[in-house]
Amino acid sequence: MRRFKAARRVAGIEYAIRDIMVPAGRLEAEGVKLIKLNIGDPNKFDLDVPRHVKEALYNAVAEGYSSYAPSEGDKELREAVADREKRRGADVNASDVIITHGISESIQLLFGSMLEVGDEVLVPGPSYPPYTSFARFFGAVPVPYRTVEEEGWKPDVEDLASKITERTKMIILVNPNNPTGALYPRKSLEEIVNLAGERGILLVSDEIYDELTYEEPFYSPTMLARDLPMIIFNGFSKVYLMTGWRLGYAVFVNPAGELDEVKDAFLGQARIRISANHPCQRAAIAALKGPQQHIEEVRRKLKERRDFFHKRINEIEGLSAQKPQGAFYIFPKIEDERWPDDKRFVLEVLNRVHVVFVHGSGFCPTYGRGHFRSIFLPPIETLSKALDALESFMRET
Ligand SMILES: Cc1ncc(COP(=O)(O)O)c(C=O)c1O
Image (cartoon, rainbow, N blue to C red; front, side, top):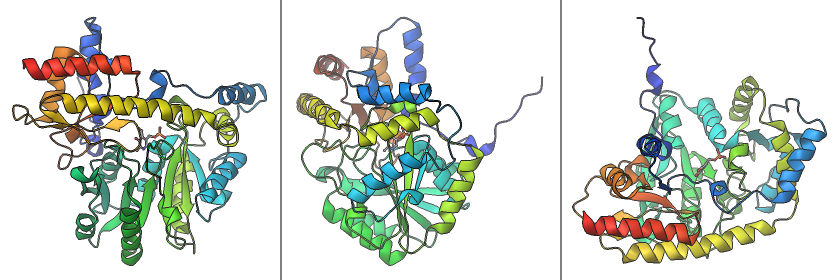
């Protein structure tokens, strides 16, 4: 029999958040009930897309928006996105916005547009895995910069600066952060903005959790620098709870045309995949322009759940966690010396007490190991069951 070979470029690709579902799926197939705290999908719990956005989707289909959209995105949606980003301080208009199938596709298109084999991308350690995976896919080298656990996982700007080389093409920010829940302080962002400006490196800021913050205000680099080229990624998956609708965008902040060539390359690739989902784009206009009250409600629920999780996890012997300031993730440290390998820890917890977490090294082998990530999206009753199970695991193993 002839076996067909997969390309070498995909050999190193992993996505810990979903990869853990392979062993978890085997248990489920045997009838074991799991508490899944691995995937950051608010729609799986008691958080739902606002009704007016759903209605806008029905209406879009009824009104005939079933055709392909322009490759760069629906004009009205691009205008609504530009207006949102302008309120944040970005000097942009609709022509600077490209709509994609989620930020995930924006990462792929941007990295495909800019990275040559051997180029380096500075990514926060730990951070959202596709930044690392897509960099590798295009033959580039992801270089993690340290974030400091004891200081709420804020970026270590000295470490970041020390890792810049001739081949550094981009600095990635994920703020608020997945998996740590860190909200970057204004001062750190100012330092990074200055560094990017001085060294002529493109800043890419992933702001998908920007409205999900609990105490401190959110700052985007667009609020701190007027003349710095940068790219902002955002989307509708988290703040508007539209995860499965697959919609996001890239905003090219391009003060003197520095990003013209990259934007053309991005758009060239966007044309080969034709367009993002058209009816969902029409509904996203309603999301941005319509009532925003649901955000307050989501924030209130998440804050309560975060407070519960944070307090409870710190009561468990052998575990400790910083308090997340944004997003819906917490990144506890495994202090118990019996568990030097975070992946084994997560697999044992899965097998013995049937709670699904993601191992920290899946977010960065250097700065994520010895930790695991949990979501705190489910109601307190579910979180409480999971944490009771985790406590008994820690006691009994
Ligand atoms: C930091 C970050 N960026 C992007 C995404 C994915 O976004 P999208 O659904 O828009 O592809 C996630 C999903 O968890 C994320 O945590």
